[in-house]
Length: 318
Ligand code: TXA
Ligand code: MG
Image 1 (cartoon, protein in one colour):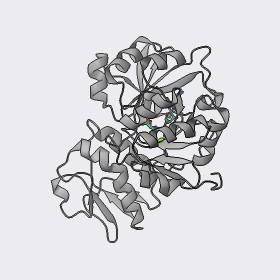
Image 2: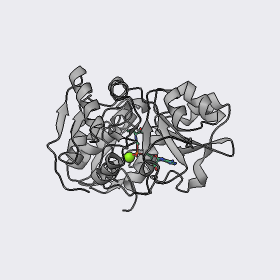
Image 3: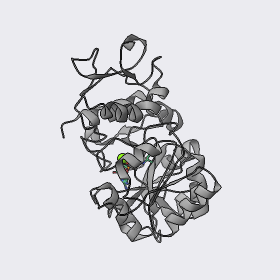
Image 4: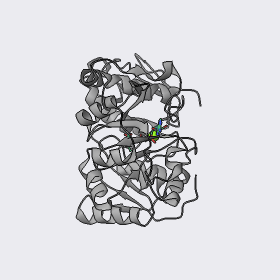
């Protein structure tokens, strides 16, 4: 990661904060923005220096391309050629927690490092009011990976952003907690057929309903979105999955009413939407306790699929 060089400004969630965030982008500097999924580390996607600064602030490998955020479908279509299945889901789920990977369009004007040299670009229209207001005020495409040091837990509050990136970025716009709490679902298209590259805030069941068939799983378990590395979202402490009870000295993270004795819970009632919204905050909190972490089983349906994906990567050998 780059050396600290800023006093990171904390911007209020009002007209002044939005205007300042847009001015930071205009100046080619970085501002962390709340979205409905997680906080994104935003920079002008057309400015090579701003894009380079995103990789440097996160310590992100240059081979891992960024998601470009735009105001609406029309803006997305100026950057990429969306094939029919992508258009269908864009109309159903944008603005919202869905990212589409599609071939770049000639004359797109994005800095080459945004796509890590790939002929495709990942695009998303966020739903969060503050993200939308900044996109409108800025008026251009914004590259934004999750606003955490590469490989660590994603941020769902301004405090999480500052814990990881304070001093490395110009500002954070404080919009409180992110309502979805998990990153966007990433969908690509291969030979005309939709391919699920990352489970996320839009469930596979919801995509299937719109597409009329389940999307193919991305490459049979292989890494298809370049950022889908086995170890990711990692707390500092070791993490154990499917724990019916804690071992001595473990922090137990429960799910559902059977885990009444747990120190922390994703959802006391067993609600998967609540568990998704709380997942990263609970992992940050458990990590701060400085003990090993054990997590109760989470069912593999709806947002549970994306929750288990993140937990497996958090538990993976590093
Ligand atoms: O919800 C989200 O998606 C958040 C918010 C801020 O929008 N962003 C986010 O970005 O999760 P990040 O950088 O943490 O994850 C982006 C993922 C990476 O796994 C990356 O490899 C993949 O998107 N990606 C980006 N461009 C791609 C492309 N052209 N083809 C395949 N995968 C791509
Ligand atoms: Mg990330």
